Length: 123
Image (cartoon, rainbow, N blue to C red; front, side):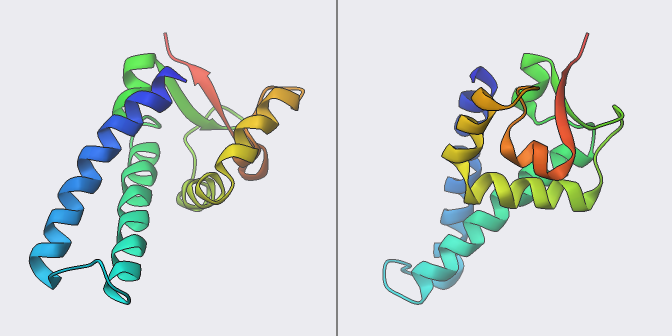
């Protein structure tokens, strides 16, 4: 949970900068359809941050701090397809995914169960 909170703070900074750049380029984004384009752009920016981090070392900055890494079921780095699928599933079902971990026999989140990924502790 500590890593999740830390990543949230980092992500807020990234999304604020992205919003600033979007508004600078396209103007006011409070009315449709610009508002919808901004929301899609922010979702994509967050996806790029997470997927890129998972593909390049298996860790976001927060995960490095908390010494955890995302790996596949055999302990190797996840694929691009797994990273994208993991992000999409985690962002679509955030609450369900975390509640699932309480019931899962291995303590895996729903998005990890469905993508064949898991967390490991880094020594």
